[in-house]
Image (cartoon, rainbow, N blue to C red; front, side, top):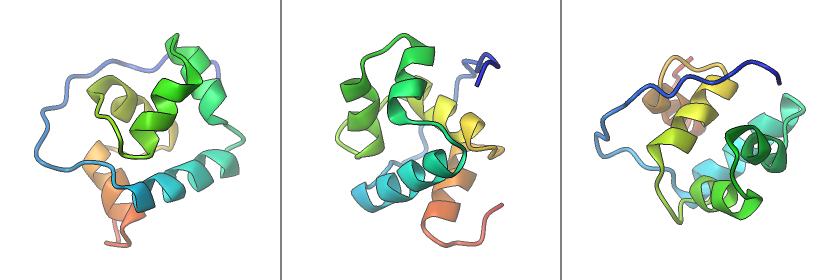
Amino acid sequence: MTEKLSGCNRKTVGVRIKPKDGLWITYQLRLKGISQTDLASQLGLKHCTVCGIIRGLRHSTRIENALYQTLGYPSFEDMIAAARGKGAS
């Protein structure tokens, strides 16, 4: 993945990644051939930081933005809705 991710500022509206969402996100990344380590490297972060966000242990708007953009969703909320089976894109 060579495309630079935009750092758009999304206001938190109460939607956070839950551990079960994290499993889905990890699976979706693998389907695209992207590891958490790849994403961390692209963002200039350690793997454990990205892993903590995906597992729902921490919160980072920057990483959450990178996740939904990498997975091709129009917004973080749409990505979480898809992870939770709510029928979002």
